[in-house]
Image (spheres, rainbow, N blue to C red):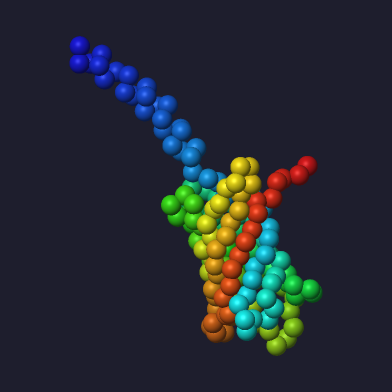
Length: 150
C-alpha cells in the first residue's frame, strides 16, 4: 500500500522540473539603447547595443558603442546571476574608430532585467579601465530587447 501512495511522486516531479527550468529568462538576442558617462567623460551619452548568446548561466557576445564617427565593437563574456541579473566583461576590441588621443574603456557591466508585459529592459551601471589600466569615468546603461524581424 505504501508503494501506491508514493508512485505518483515521480510523475509529479517529471511535470514540475520543466516548469522550473522554463522560469529562467534567456538573455540571448539583441538589446539596444543608451550608455551614459558621468561628468568628465568624453560625452554624456552614447548609442549602445548588446548581442548576447546564453548557454546555461554563461553568456558570450558583443557590445557596440557609438557617438558620431567614434565607434567600437567589443567581444564580451559574462554570467546570469539570480535569474534577473547579468554581469558582463568586455575582453577585446574587434573593430573601432577613434581619435588618436582617445582610449577605449573595457567595461564591467552589471544589468538587471525588468519586464513590463511583453517589453523587457536591462538597466544598471558600468565601470571600466582603459587598455593602459587607467580608470574610466563610469555611468549607466539602459537597453530594450529588440524584436527579431524577418
